[in-house]
Amino acid sequence: KYNGPSLEELKIIRKKNLNPGLTTYYSEPIAFHQGYKQWLFDLNGKRYLDMFGGICTVSVGHSHPRITEALTEQVQTLGHVSNIYFNPKIHEYAERLADKLPGKLKVIYFVNSGSEANDLAILMARAYTNNFDIVSLRNGYHGMSYQTMGINSNGHYKYPVPHVPGFYKTMNPDVFRGIWGGNKCRDSPVQPDRNCQCKDEICRANEKYVDQFKDLFLYDIPKKKLAAFFAESIQGVGGTVQYPKDFIKKAYEVVKEHGGLFVSDEVQTGFGRTGDHFWGFEGHCIQPDIVTMAKGIGNGFPLGAVATTPEIAQSLTKASHFNTFGGNPLACTVGITVLDIIEDENLQQNSKTVGTHLLLELEKLKTEFPVIGDVRGKGLMIGVELVSKESTTEPLDLSKIMKIWEYCRDNGVILGKGGIYGNVFRIKPPMCISREDADFTVSILKDALTKFK
Ligand code: PMP
View 1 (cartoon, protein in one colour):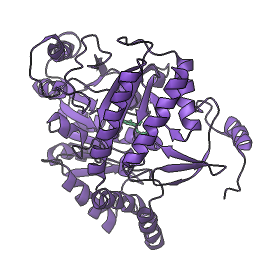
View 2: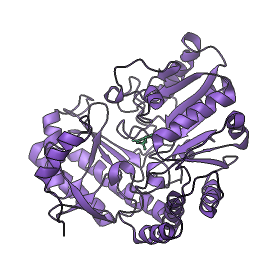
View 3: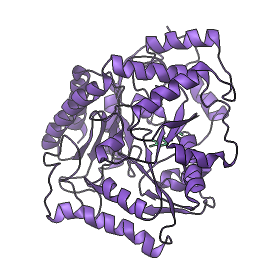
């Protein structure tokens, strides 16, 4: 039972004492007081199915009893010691995480967020290559620190201040919205010919996107002077955007040709969410030089990490790299427990089976409702893009989107909303959701679309 300040009182405090730039997300804000597994409870005790997972963060479920237990035991033993000392947890966790990573990605740096992880990756790439220029994809999101704001390419997250030099953007190979399309060839259960090797116009879209990526080295960046290329395996904040099959693989080759490192931002796509693989980059068949992670790694605990090779890590010994909380025993305890739970509860497999079922059901809904322009994603990383009418990419009117979205909330389903036009429902729930939860989500969304399409 909740006995704290009312929603009205919270609104006053928020207005007076919190960052005025914070969104209230819904037109009428909602306050959550409690969570358990895939559910959230508001101040009145009403239950919601959390299909957004705290923005793709709650990986194994809210208030998981095993995490509570492990954390309680650790805080009673040793709450904090900085990583200048040895403590068993940071060592145990580094080893466990390294075991999850392929190839030479065996050196781990612990930080506290995705922004910090990407910030460190920028530094690492520049220190190792002695190059300065960094390339990322339009519509990408990598954090809100001053530097990561530079690799973001999303106007909603750009302050009108001078930006750090050396950051370049390349056209987003968005198979739905991109100028060359390519939507027959992405890696998703709702794209039946995802393995096609044909050379028709749509498949050739990929070559065109890759060509314009190469153009960067004709026009903007001196040849072989690239420090790094950053990409999410599937764009998260940008609206669950997938690239044509093989784009990342080809981009990787271009990056190597120009002396750069490939940084895979796995902040949303890591830890089994995409179902087929533990890491999203594995779906692109590449071996990154640096992997950044956060969100799902700690199931809501502030934890982030950067993994790289021993050679690249060596470049950061040119000065002392230190982070007070990075690798704190509490954070590492949570990290270890999250890995255990993913394994013991078979959550990667659940992401795949429930995610694929949900994708296919949403695809059926698409045939009934022309306002659904696109259903995409992999595992439990799903996007539903709403458009004004069939076969266009013009976003559905925002007031309609709000009505559909808020109807879902009022009827117990929390969906994310994003994409550059705010017209994509983002579905990234805790990976423990069931088939029934997926069906419930589809039925509520169907009711909402029937009412407000
Ligand atoms: N990378 C990606 C792909 C993200 O989605 C986010 C957060 N939305 C970040 C980095 C930044 O993480 P944080 O908010 O923990 O700094």
